[in-house]
Length: 232
Image 1: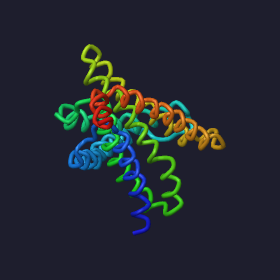
Image 2: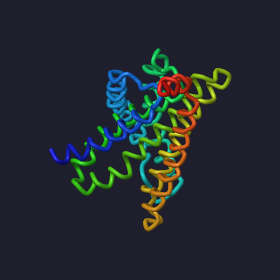
Image 3: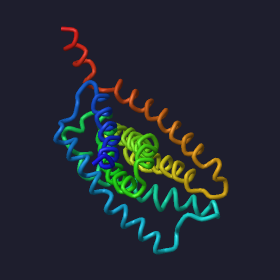
């Protein structure tokens, strides 16, 4: 039970954090639970895609080019395109998706569903040490991928002239940072730089995520009404 708690807690904590960051009009909790469950489901096609790539012989290698392909495409793209599909298919056109920040909210919820199931698997294999490390690294990394994806999905829905471009950027941005984080951890030629590279990648993604949250929150169409009600 301790391992299960440690595996589940980071994803739930980040989900709650994003919920409270949606300051001006929070999303219905039932829809947030549904989004989290969709994230759980999204791991199934991701595993299928990754296994397909593995059957073609792609894996971590001493050749940094092959490892980069594995990190960015086999893992990064496969996982992020599956998360994107569930957000785009089941949440993007929902009536409750009525402001840019909702792109961040729903993308993060899906990402946390995915990350929580993945985390349970890794923690049960690696134990408490793995749980603590992933609590501060892997799960927050998945959150930043979700924020970056959601930022562009928010732009896509409410900037119709550039909708297709922003949807491409939603997948590309999340895939890039996912790949960069994994590549740092996977490369075998400079092991002494591996963890540091992942930390740097994560910190950059966190800074961009904080900026994305701020921009979309301040652009909320519900801000004026919220502040007027608070002033009464």
